[in-house]
Image (cartoon, rainbow, N blue to C red; front, side, top):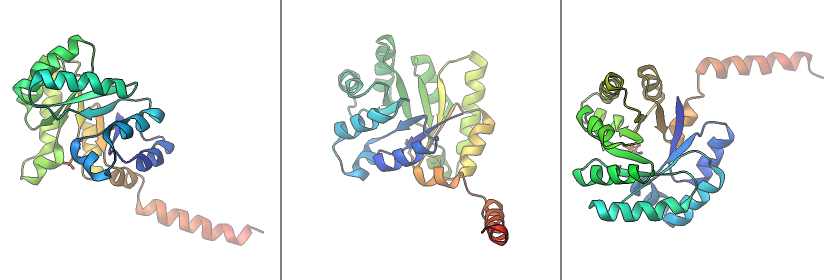
Length: 214
Ligand code: G3P
């Protein structure tokens, strides 16, 4: 399973990348707003040290404008993936971008039927939003499992990118279902290391080492 980091914060990306945990990056307009930096400058900086895919989201709502935006964004880095919302105009854009060999990530996916449509349009990635479904009392993981089954039934190559993940259990469950990628916020990524038995075991080893260290 690949791990993408779900942030536009360059310092956080660098920190987790140094630990070997960053296979790619996903951003969206809200994450760009959160860092308060220039969009283009930020993506170019991320692309200067990340070789994996970097998702950049369009803000246009009609397909022609989405395509124009996509063609601008792909010049910002070496492995830019265009994030397109799950709308009819969005799927028109995905079809055209796919023909132009521009990679896409269909975002804001909340049903397996939407994921099927995205795959039929030729999307490179599909992003089911797990946490946001959980928030309204549905099961985000059930959605990931349904998409896995549908894609396997028809051997679609579209990769399942589990998104809106809020805690390590979301990452583990996505891996067990067979999602291709998990995009994970930095704070959750750091929690993947944690186990109380690791902490207490290490504390005991360090304490015992004092007895024989000079
Ligand atoms: O990549 C977008 C997605 O991960 C959003 O997450 O926490 O805003 O629901 P969240």
